[in-house]
Amino acid sequence: MSALTVSQDPEQSWDDLVRFWEEMDWPEGSKVEIIEGIVTVSPAPAFRHNVIAERIQRRLYSVIPDDWGIYQTLGIAVPSRLGMLIPDLVVVPLPECAESDTHIPAALAELVVEVTSKSNARHDRVSKPAAYATAGIPLYLLIDPWAPGGPTATLYGEPKGDVYRVLSAVKFGDPIRLPEPFGVTIDTGEFPVG
Image (cartoon, rainbow, N blue to C red; front, side, top):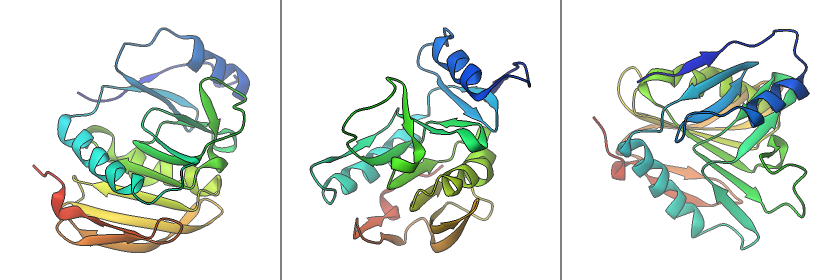
């Protein structure tokens, strides 16, 4: 099943767009994001997708400080890119007080992880990294089982404008190391493929 886009007035303000996103009655279990000003509704990810995210999350929990959290359904806002994104994983120091019940500013994140789905891989490869870099998120880990040429894991960092630098890229089966403040190696050989 593929993603669905929801049409809305292109003249809407960011606040109106967020209110629409927050107040609509979306299909249960779906992932609803605003990507470049377009509301996108995707089905729940496949089991293999969730296995990959869970394995990364398990490794991250062993190295993050006690006052940080790892979230799977947290909306992160990038108003300058008209984005309300829900990464597969986001690592955030626990905020003292959230301004909203539905999302946080993306700039609070230390790491975002996306696992591509066949139907919407372009978002994870192009649109989302541009938004994450714009927000200044230090690290972006893209796990791409659907990459042309075979499954890959790519770690991006050093954001400048809307662009990241590739810090490391490996094929599934090879380890990928996340730098400090994580200092952890993830074994991509544990990821299911196919």
